[in-house]
Image 1 (spheres, rainbow, N blue to C red):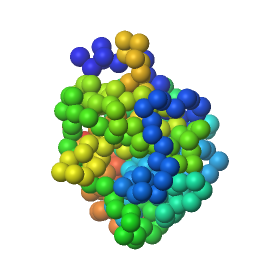
Image 2: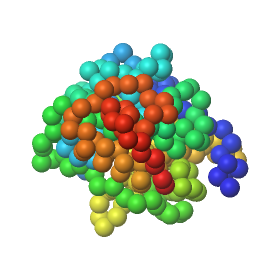
Image 3: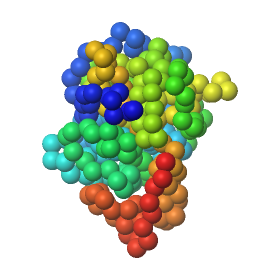
Length: 268
């Protein structure tokens, strides 16, 4: 069972210190970074940074805990969040400011990364203005990969915050309906990084990095499943017509977060 698989879990808070894994490859040149321009740094003013990836010209997918202040535990005001697409060596291919953020309704912020929390650790950042740049193509999503499938992770972290790094020598070790377990040796600060599967010659997002764990003396990464929860987030975002009140999420439904009376329950 999955509960037996993961023994120790550590939430990867923004900008926490760690050493880069040996399998990480920094994307130093423009040619190397070109395919990953829609991955960028999510800056939280006064609260560090995470990684995010565009899934539409105005939508950035990241981890839910990335839109909270790690010191106070309060949900960040969108005015404190910006997205730097393709950030590399002090320059961004494009930049967008957050208009609003939506997190999974079952996500409850905390410093301890329980499996239940990791399972719903996703958020969507809506930008004030869509990024319209032919060189920056939002990523498509991929249905849950199978055990043994190779994956890639593109991320930023402290010590390598000025350019993205690519890790591609890892695979899916296990999964349940909620969480993927990966052999990737992710580091602190990689929260929200997209987990890619190559399909039909394209890199497609299959999951989002939430935490790291320790299993049988090996480091593993935990990725939040997308599937139905993300589809519900996008559907509610589309139906909300821009009316969104920033509230501290708890066990409220997404409709309640959006000021609606109807309650929606998610299924995996």
